[in-house]
Amino acid sequence: MREGFEVGAKNFAQKNERSLSEVLSSTDYVKLLPIIDYLEANDSITPKEAEALVNKSSATVRRYLGLLISAKVLGSKRSTTNITYYRISH
Figure 1 (cartoon, rainbow, N blue to C red):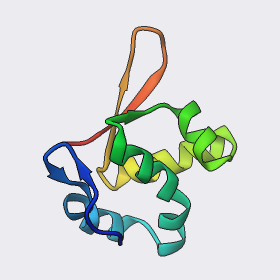
Figure 2: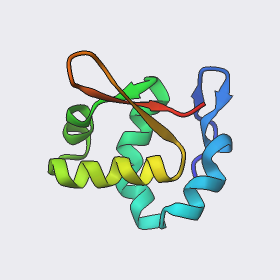
Figure 3: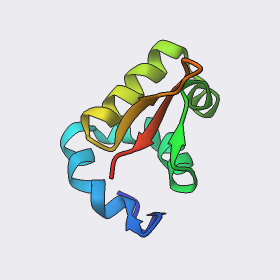
Figure 4: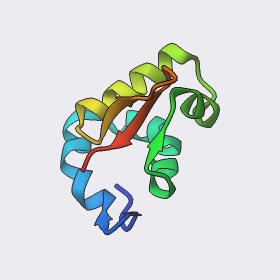
């Protein structure tokens, strides 16, 4: 795991290292790294933003985001415009 990413006042890597290692294989972690890096700088991500980051299909991105939800790294929140925003779980 990479150490030292900050999300607000919380250390993202430390907070989620255990849950990520329990749910993700090292291969999946590498695939999700662009999304994780994006979340270091931003509090949320949309599926379209994630698709652009990993250059994968919407189905693959839904699976990736599902892995992060399973690891309790992300939660989702639907906006009034029917766009789903995935936010970092606090």
